Length: 239
Image (tube, rainbow, N blue to C red; front, side):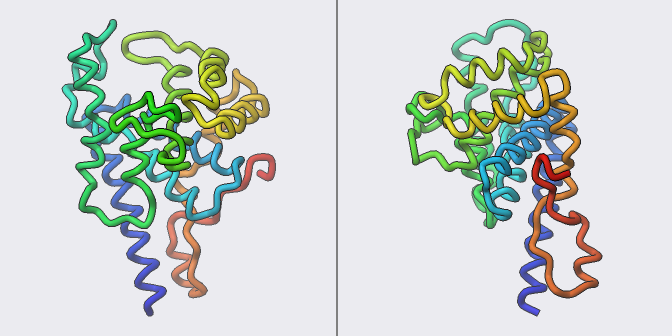
């Protein structure tokens, strides 16, 4: 009974995170799509790095809402064409801490708040909001940071055209070991080579982490049948 209660509680928490993501999509569909693609990419990188099932679960869920704090930023700044003023950029940067504050009192079994708050931190301490460096940044946040930057450069934005996978990867490789986690960038590079630049996002989207978030099923067959997330996702190359 205790195991069943824990299972159902964990399931409810996952549903809550998906609900938070869905709410944010109503006000800013562009950011919601960015979060969805960054989450799938982060989980794909995490698989390649050998993260365990619990870490992959948290990485995907945290990345799915990593920009939730943008709800607190004026929408006209998120989609403003052209360069932001220093004052405007300072306001946009508050989204990381705002996201943490939104979930501050929610007790989750994954480092979701850390991913939200740290995805703009950089290994050399040059990031925000706290200027964390090195191991002070969780591995999940380091992976989300790389996925976030890669997706943002690859894909089009309301204020610019897409720059493509090659430019995105080149920028990350330039900062590998200083701003970005080197092993994470190496894993991303391997994914790009495996999928090919032209088909990369179709390849990432082919693994639907939204319906395969990993939960350890209970022995109870009925509960396993009810479980909506299905079996764990295949590792790339095994599908």
